[in-house]
Length: 234
Image (cartoon, rainbow, N blue to C red; front, side, top):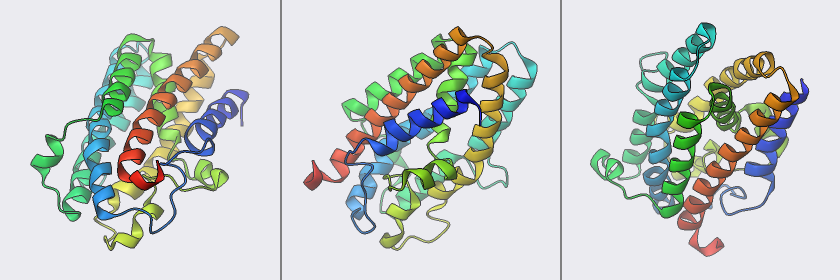
C-alpha cells in the first residue's frame, strides 16, 4: 500500500467512521422505517448527483485512459453492469419498499446540511483540477470499501447491516450492497491513477486536501441525516 493510499484511507476512517456521531454508531435494530424514509429522501440528493460529478471530472480531464475509467464508472452508476438500473433507481426501490413513492423521493426538500454538502461536492468536482476531482470521488467511494469497513469496526447508516432487521429482501436492499461490490475496484484503480499522476509532494498534498474536503462534506450530509433519522440520539 502506497503512502498516498494510506493517507486517503486514513482520512476515510477518521472522518466518516471513527469520530463518533449519530450516523456512525448504529446498532442493528436502531433504524425505524420512518428513519429509513428520512435516509432515502435525503441521500437521494447525493445519489442522483454523483454521476454528474463523475462526468464533471471527466470533462476536466485530458488523459484518455483516465476518461475511459471514469466513463466505465459512470456507466455502472447510470445503467448498471447487469441491466439492473441506475444506482439512483435502486435507491428509489429501497424507498418504495418503505412506503415512499418515486415522486415523493424526487421532490423531497433537502435539509440545509444536505444542500450544503451537495453544493460543496459540486464545486469541488467542477471547479478543481481533474486530479483533485478524482481524489474527491475516489475518497467518497472508499467509504464503501470492504477493507475500510472491516478496519473501522462500526456500522454507519448506509451500511446494509443497519437495515436488515426492517424485513426488506435482498433486491430491496440492493442499493446498500452494490457499492461494496463495485466501489472496491473503482477505488483500487483510482488510487493507482492518483499515485501515477500526483508525482510531486505538492500534487499529493492537493489530492489529500481535496479528499478531506469531500469527506467532510459527506460527513455533514450523513450527520444531518443521522440527526433526523435518530432524533433520540441527538
